Image (tube, rainbow, N blue to C red; front, top):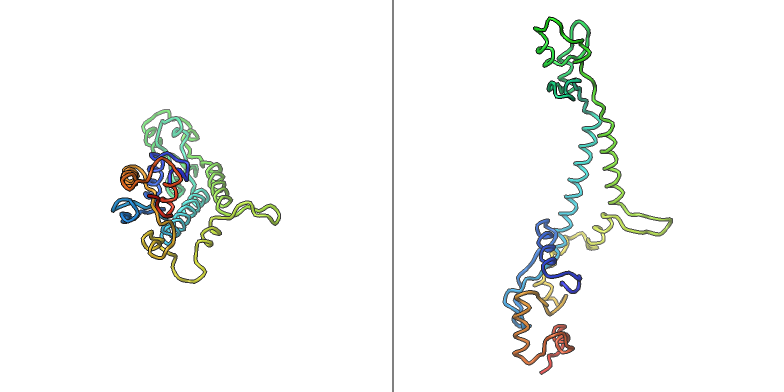
Length: 240
């Protein structure tokens, strides 16, 4: 797999481990003794049925998170005391909380922390210095809307005229689905091998590759990239 993807073995293993942690790939231990391998060769594969469900669920969670962020930016109103920015107080109020601190004389929303702090002050500062001010959340709303737009653009296909430059993620998922209404295949390597689907020879890496190389050497097959080895690995008749 490494040579096919032009990846070093360590990077390949890290990538496969990451994809496994994200539930996008799986592996099955396959008995490869009959082909000169080990009894438990690790064979990586994509469980189409599981992978499609994972991708669709993650897309749902992503869009739901973005929609909630936009909804919060549209509906939430925060009021700050001028002293909050200078850390003179902790005057941060929601819209509901601000309505409960209305000054009966002026009708202003006053920071209760500052009101209590200046209650015994014979020369208190003007009330406008601790009157709550509506926080402008235009920036948060613009950011939430921009994030939603960017995600929608990336998930949908791109067309120029009648020519499609790239398919959308949902188009790709639909192509994976079978023509019938049945579930997608689990794509198990052992099941594929039993039906004659896929490679009959597992290349292997690391310790598995060394075991196979020794067995090939014992059988008189020269290793090191010769044509005989390539034929043998491809499932052709082994040269003596």
